[in-house]
Length: 55
Image (cartoon, rainbow, N blue to C red; front, side, top):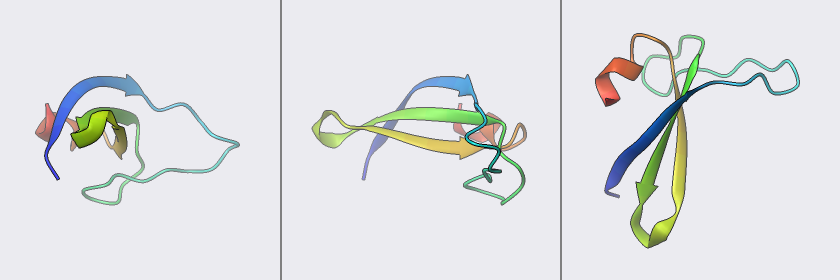
């Protein structure tokens, strides 16, 4: 699946549940939005360190 980064945004808390980084497993602080085939949007969560790798 090919994906293209479209934007980054701070991760909003969702009912007090912790979310974890898609790459390393640490606590996520950012959401990355990607455009994928078919016009869909994929949202992945990253920590402050790993989000630099997807920019």
